[in-house]
Image (cartoon, rainbow, N blue to C red; front, side):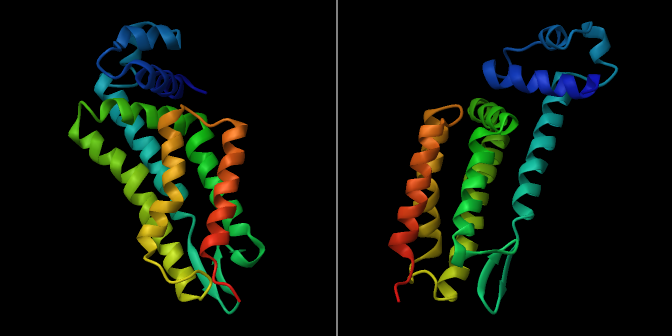
Length: 201
């Protein structure tokens, strides 16, 4: 990790713990182990660091979901060549939930946006887009395809997405990151969802 990357990492940690306004350039420099004046060799100011963090991790999340392309073939729906018929779709869903709730950077980034959305309307909009709207729209498209392929019973796809995602979103509010026990609960939720909404014979 070079100095610029360490500045981003330590700033993310500090901002996600105390908020943007409570942290000074001196605090960041101390965490990185450099003089405050040296920080300006890499960033114009504290706002520049904050904006870099927002851009870096927003792009990271967008790339993660854009790579989860939905495709169909004669055997039904696939998600990156992972077929519903062998339960891999739900295994992949669990991977997505792990990414959002256990990945160190995603946990800190979510905490940062959670704190700052009360101070900044643009951050509030970004939080809603990344952690609510984009996820629900992504899941809705999957469920719509599954319904059209006669794999799921006919229900409103967006409502299904809300029902599928809500327990995960609740856990993200309850804890900074999820434990193994909570991950087990999520697996049960996924299995029960599939049992309830899969079209029977």
